[in-house]
Length: 577
Image (cartoon, one colour):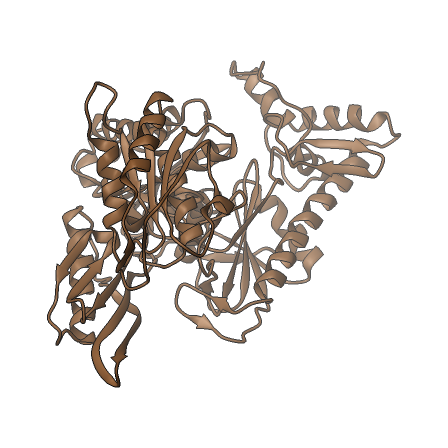
């Protein structure tokens, strides 16, 4: 059995799958002040009747890292940078403890100038006095030679006095083999900024899983690229968990639907609608990595757009008419009224929301429909609108906002080469022929989206918990990049901390075999079951180095990946009518 948990903005969903069949599912409110409580509540809801020993894998999607960054609840990070000539690191300053040191390495990994140890000592002392405990060390060409990053990290983790030593240091070369100094800098910073918060949560999740008798299960966390990583690995790389929720949406749709054409995925939750695009049946990805705030990073990610339209999005009546969202003031009136009657949290803040409008139009009958009608009648009275008129305007506005955002995302994708999980579709224009809709309000919105768009709209089975299904069925993925210089006799796989000597005869075929073997071994050492999804070579090349008209060696670069995907299918999709 496989267990998937998706911690969303409004609800935490959980499912248990047995050979692709959903045998238990649950939806509980998300407590943003205590996400662990939400995870435990979801486990408690789906595990009765399930033999804990039969669950071999628990996959979790969490909003923790994303929320911490968006809400400014990250930790202060000390950043040490050794860049050398070229890009000015000050143009990419992050945080209030940013120190640029002398010293540089060139693109082949040769030290051009030594690291400034005096400046390093001064910077380390200043950060310790400021009470900084997590750090990032970044060199421009550290993937070719990480020596400067390692020296900076050693200075942070050793020294006299009780304040010596760092709680965590992110070294830039361990994040990715790709050469992009500004992205590496931002990625290392955010990785350390959420490290402590994420690790506290990760330890608690592991203990909770054991409390429910699942100690034998493999535990994984979803990444933004549509794969999972072992919980143990995620503790060192929490930045990879940013935007894991939208990734669960995409993988859930792959698991539930046989997608072969260009289409748009719409995951309508309580707080937001996440939008993704498929080209030739494969999800479109960010070419270089996702952007966090205004900072481009090296975090691989699916191409996703989120807008503030969901079932609990607040309704307002202004000079230009009815608006929906982007904020959420609390549950819809229908939810609050029903909770109050049942002795629940009837006192919690709530107000007219999209779900209330859908109730009044007859698109659904969720909770206390009469409470929805009374609330909309009261809101519309000031402008002479009946509850029905206001509801129709609100629903029309929500549908228009979702479809406009979907068209804008497709247009953005079509302005540049289209990259998917499988391949680069050079010169390809994406032309969606249908929408797939999932999430709590999906059943009510699907026929409205079909009428407004004129496209085929499909609703999968188990659409309300599709994210959790995607989480459960997503396989473990990882990528690594090998760089070798036969003249120097050196081979590195930075993300896996591999650095060894190679002979001058070292060839491309050997490099491909080495990186495949190293990546598979690393994943298995972490307890990941590859389930036949062996590492694939995605990029490979060797270039002769010529001096004085003779070949003196070769540079070899190989990129290897266990591609994102699912380990099975579940359910099917039906037309929305």
